[in-house]
Length: 252
Image (cartoon, rainbow, N blue to C red; front, side):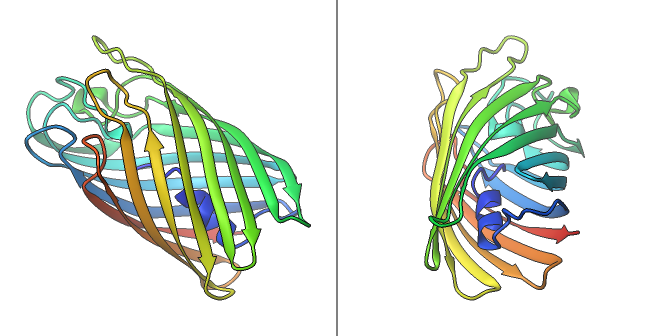
């Protein structure tokens, strides 16, 4: 549901590191389906409403999502963690998801080498209804470094991060390292395609690591409107079986 590197790929495709401050608003639709070690599929629809403000080397971001989840009672939408009994029965629930706030700093901006390094952090606030199973009911923290380097038409992308989970009642979640690697290829001044691999350590001693693969296409209509579409699949128990979505961004 959270595509760690897709947002960076989206940004890198259109040279976001500009000197002027700007405001970017985006929304989209993410749909995923997977068993996550259960006997039946869990289907999750995630609609984020995101505001991002860039000034000098700083970027501040806030995301408030709408979530719909249908499936077994022990799968949560946030990070797709299996937690026993978060919903009373197999059900279909919807509502406000967890709010995510973040800030990052562009620590390296080498224009000659076309190398950029951002460091940042995020906090996930438990604004989702825990009784409906729309969230874990706990606050999570993440710290990360994003790197991208452009060589001709290709931009290489990478992320390394560490996530601290708040433990739901009766559950001991592991804090985990996560990472991503991929590339974006510029077809033209307005179009890019790319590939991303997302990795995460296992969140419990009985679960598996996450490993997912995404293909994406980005298109810039003009200086204001940009669109990215993607499909994703995974090959571990904790990973999505199939998913996809689209992100529309508007820049001022």
